[in-house]
Length: 334
Image (cartoon, rainbow, N blue to C red; front, top):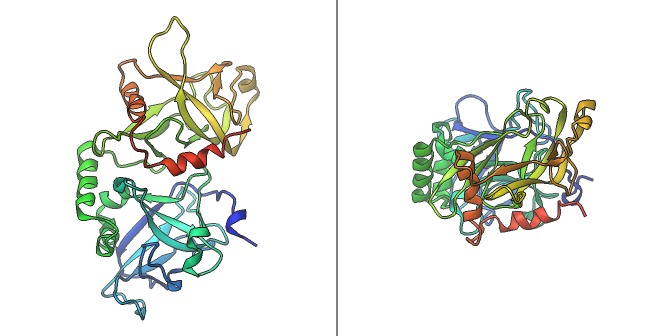
């Protein structure tokens, strides 16, 4: 039985959601809400093994009867697993599409999919969120929803439900336009040291998005290189990692961060040359190159340094990711 407790990480690539005014394909599913507090059994959605499940968005009060899918007055959304191979969703993916908003952090809201065993909304609290291969929740960030014209029907639906405040939507859109910070599909947003994010060891360039909790919608892409010309292509796999402060040798001044490996999410394949060069990726340990921890300088007056400095600035500020950080502690190797 595919129970919430036994659901392992689903091997999905980063995903996106596409919303549109219904035109051609007739949806079989009708969603009346994305509010987890108002879900009904009729919102239970089985997307098992599907490539692009389609649903009709119908906001109506009271919701005593659901209209049959119609190509005239409603909008529809399609969910995609993404990736070059146009992957389908795994089997036994059944539950509720919903709008997740961290406490006191409306700008960090996102759409998620909650896995449950039955269509009873009472089981929502006992379910688990659909996850990707990197161990992070399947999600569609508010930035993505707000930034694209094709997602306007979904924005309108969320506003009509009272889940998305118009002023919040305006702030997000202005921030995206001002900084051109539309998130990459394979990058994650973090605000604190020790907050987990996925790292692909196959990639030449690694990226994570860092946000300031002191300035409204200040989010910046931080780029770093785990591989150099000696290490590139000699290791494959993926891991869940987190930045943490690192004390530099006494002859070096300033702050630095290292990468703590929290969990291996894709099997590691090391070439013989990787072993000779002492490239180490072990759960619970610092990622190491050449036998020494891989570090990034914070006070080196570069764009990356200023981005990493935001993590130190955020310390002591109310943490909208407290729950995720608490869960991350359970990922660390004993």
